[in-house]
Length: 68
Image (cartoon, rainbow, N blue to C red; front, top):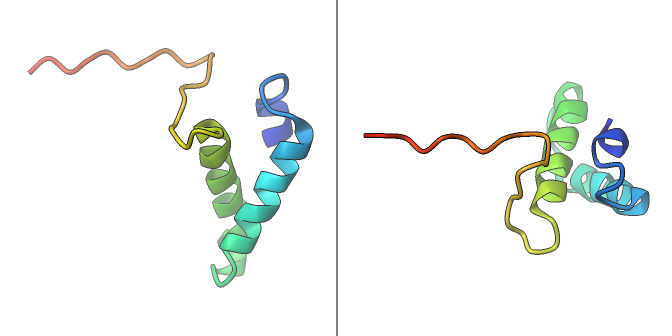
C-alpha cells in the first residue's frame, strides 16, 4: 500500500528500506499488531522525509486554523 501511496514522490527502494527499518525498530511489539504498526511508522517516516519534519500529502488540504 505504501508503494502506491508514495508513487512518484518517494523512490520504491526508499519505501522498502523504510518499511524494513520500521519492522526492525518494532521488534518486541505484539506479532498480531505488527502489520499495522509497521505501516503507520513507515508512513510517518516517509511523510517526514529527509528533514524529519512531517509534510502534508498533496491530496490532503491543510486544516483550518482554530478560531478561539
